[in-house]
Image (cartoon, rainbow over all chains, first blue to last red):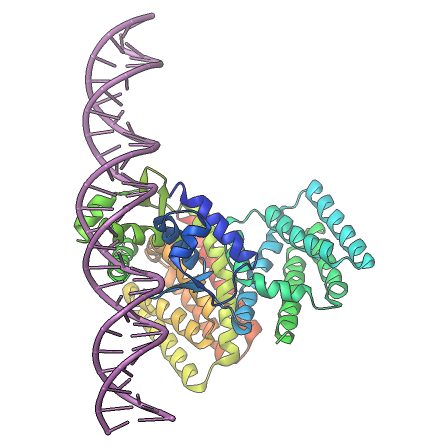
Length: 208
Length: 208
DNA sequence: GTCGCCTATATTGTTGACGATATTGTCGTA
DNA sequence: TACGACAATATCGTCAACAATATAGGCGAC
């Protein structure tokens, strides 16, 4: 399990980076060569990835990349909606002045990125905002669950960022979240976060 | 991974039944004898249980039962609060007449159990109510997460059911959930479920 | 030509032994 | 007596070979 860590991290990173196609088979022997590891280590990694919901294993047949369809992506996002809502509420209750300034800075950068039409930078800021809010909330269990769910969604997340005009809509939602947290208004923060992710879900459904 | 299934299920059941003390070490060789399985199978089971958050493993040292303290139990319950809220809302939106009748029956039995002072039956009905609501909601992802979180909480759940007078309080909360679902009122169902679990969290904090 | 069976192959499942590592207990010294 | 170093032990980590299983392709019968 010591050497496994590297294999697991590498393999996970590769999956998250979309280097494997959905439903692509992951043959243990091949992975041994690719990651120059023993079959033992590969098996351990595959089992861990199965538990994380990234890989699907059928006894005596093998492992393959789990294909998460729109329906499941929507379900995942629905759970994310309420859990991120909890996180936002928590953040509003615990945010310090310094953290509030960080959030404002991220918001300003977002507006700038939208104005400049830089979708790449906007996407980056998007994840930074969410992770900053998580950090402020300091809710381990909720953060863990979000991380896991996020991993299963990367493919669709990518598709979403390609939808034209989304950033100009979501920038206002993001600002509402930031404002509510800075105002220390838990109810408003939860509501803003939920309505934001709810709109993400709608966009997700539209990508069919 | 075929023979593993039995080992994993047995071991998991044993942990959930509280047959192992928190922080108790799980030595692979011992488990091999107890479950008459190979070390290979045991290792696989332990890895799976680690992913489920029931077991904690330290490299080169071994596995032990994870000790979930009050703080973590509260965090888990907080996540449960919002996810069960989602489930309740969903249930209210999808409940059929037949399912509504089932819920009413469970509610009636709960009142009867409280009147009779039968805490065992009440606990049973409690989990049946929640699982029925989950079934009605038909939300796979949310149900999975609840199942996992519930597994980590069994110890505290048991302690809670021993608190005297809890059932007479919670029976009304349960009835409120049932009523809201039957009324097809999603907002009310979510609110009722959240306030119910919120009160469970308070009781949990009080058990310290 | 198509269906079902059977063999061949690819792939995973399992085992036992060996090596690495952390923990525990002991001994000597200050 | 208290402390540190060292050795012994317990336990986990890793490996390479073997067994079991499912899949795919070819063959024959209808």
